[in-house]
Image (cartoon, rainbow, N blue to C red; front, side, top):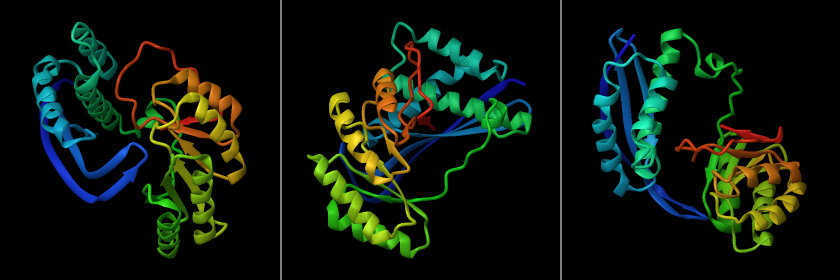
Length: 262
C-alpha cells in the first residue's frame, strides 16, 4: 500500500473566550489533514495551531511536504524518519514540527485502519478511555465554582479546570470551591498549561497531593522530561502530559510509573 496524496483543509472554530494561565483562547485554528492511499484507505489528523496566525502557514507546509511522501509505502515510522532527515538543516521544530506531526498522525491512523485495529492496540497497548469531562477556564473561585456546579447538573462525572494562579493558596481555593459546588463524587483534574518553573511546580504539587485530584496536567514545559520525572517521583497525584508533544526530540524520555501520558 502506498501514499497517494494529501487533502488539506483549514478551519477556524469560534469558541467562548477560554482563559488559561498562559493566555486567552477565543478560537480553535485547526488543520484537517487526510492522507489517501492507493488502496482506498484514508487516515486523518487534526492539528491545533494555537493561533490563527499559524493556521495557513502550517497547512501550506503540509502541502509543500506532500511530494516527499507521495508514492512512498505506508510505513509511518520510515516516512517520519525520512522527513525529519530531510528537514534536519532547517530544523524540525516550530511550524515545521507541527506540519510533520500532523502528517505523522494521519499516517499512523491510515496504518491502523489498514490493519483493522485501534492504534493503541496496534502499538501493543490496551484501550484505557477517559470519561467525558467538562472544561473550566481560568475563572477564579466564584466562576470556577459556578461552572463546576453546572457540569454536575448536566450529569458529567468529571471536570478539568485551568489553574496556575499567582499563589498556591489561590489554586487550592479554586479546587476546593469546585469540590464544594460539584459534590464529593465528582472527579477533579487541573491543568497548569506549562506555566510553572520546576522549582515552583515541586512546591505546589506536593501541596495538591492532599486535594484528591485525578491528575495534574502539564505543570512545567511539556518537553522538560527530566523535570516531569523528578516531579512524578515526588508527587502521589498522577501527572499528565502529551497534548503539546509535536516535535521529535533526541532526549530520551524516562518516565516513572506515576507519570501518565496521552
